[in-house]
Length: 299
Image (cartoon, rainbow, N blue to C red):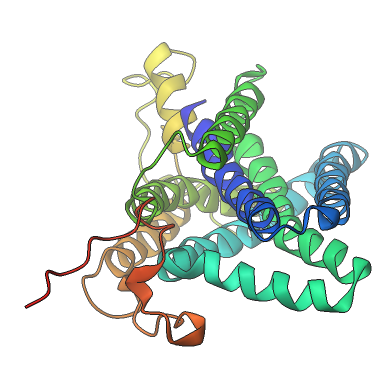
């Protein structure tokens, strides 16, 4: 449940921040007439994301067992790829997200209503589709026959919406760069479990051999139906009897990805950051700290 809460919180907060930045900029610049097209674009994006999630859930139920496993495994791998790209992208661009969105919004304002709808739709829609896919894959991997995974996602999204509202009202200021870094690292751990489970699905679909070649079996020590077994599965997608292929995939993804993500230099640290427009220094952007940095004393 915690892993699904984290997914809902992280993905939902990204979308909430995008909405807050768009709305606040229009209000601040006196373009409240453009709010309606923005909300239309946001509503369409949310509806499409929900429809995509429903299509994944109900559409897969009509398939045979092997087809369900093949679909679940394939989409889990795709979801992990998208989320991995997303956490690295946000790590590098969190400082400049506001400036980037302001630039797109200025261009859309000059083009008209249709461009405003499209800007809001694209800004929120990408987050929505990524969230729907990864949530579906994670719930599929952590499913224990109870609604707890979905409850976790719903609570995470609700928390994200509330935090977004607090950001907009100016009642909450946190270091967003650090927030996205540490939640991104935790998402990588969750994604490793989803990836391993996805390959297990492909093994059950007979797409990949080795289903009976277990790496270990500690089901007697950590029963899957025990409270701690359920907790480990819910948080880390832990399986007490994984195959050798699952463990190999898990290690090959988790170790280098975390090392790169938390590396002090290079791609994981944001080398090649996008520069803010109009010659604004990167550290002038208030959205990574929640407030502007203090100026150095004049000499």
